[in-house]
Image (cartoon, rainbow, N blue to C red; front, side, top):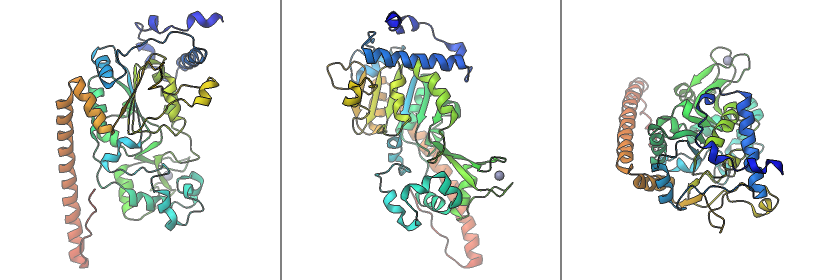
Length: 380
Ligand SMILES: [Zn+2]
């Protein structure tokens, strides 16, 4: 195998940071090299070629913290799922097993998944918007975990956050479009479904429609308007694929939080980092481990926390908030993180209060003219 000598290439590559080419997002050369890195990693792990460098001095949270503090770690990718938002009171909108599908009977769907299917939605949008109203969070208050990611950004070590969540809490916490890949789309923006129009609408506009039981219609062309979340039968955002090829080969620490890594293609991302890239899982249970059968066939790429061969994967079993606090503590960032959370939550509370005050003024005015009691808005 002539290519074997090329395989353990990470060591020489380490010093060469390919900064300039990072800007050209859709250069096909970059995509090709990302693809090559992926294939190289796949083959080298399949054939047991190339000595994977052991980067962490210890497979623990302490080991990860020492690595981050060493200054060698500058391209952290976070992969996150519903588990990071549960402490914010956000229901898991799509995943089965959360009781959501059991709740759908009243909508008379042909089958439960239809509510998130694009073809069904275009004909019968009512059930989706009724559910959206029912599940609409009373408050958008990011969690400790969200603010931990904001801190990674502020410290200049966050390459990107790949989220499966559509609740926009990453944005509320201060991550911007460039920092984020919303793999399953987002409620943050909506678009007219007409291909000729595609007019964009914001969250406030959509919220107003949802709460007034109006089916959102485009004010330009009267077509349906749909939040930019990815329905079944729709493609993932193009940016997911282009960024993935750029980001993962260059990642030097992967932090996976609050996801059971069940949904593809998201779950397969863990196998796209280099062979020596450490991977930290913060979750209520171990997940993402290699399927033994697939492993025998050479399609591994799964995580290995416990075997004799484990060398880079760390599992911290806890809530995402507790895990992030523990890591922040080891990094010496805990006080800063707690101050950030406190300050931002206070800001959101005062904003909410202003909104509620103006809402209740409006409602009181309505009530006095219609002699009806103002409807109290559900908290949290
Ligand atoms: Zn339109």
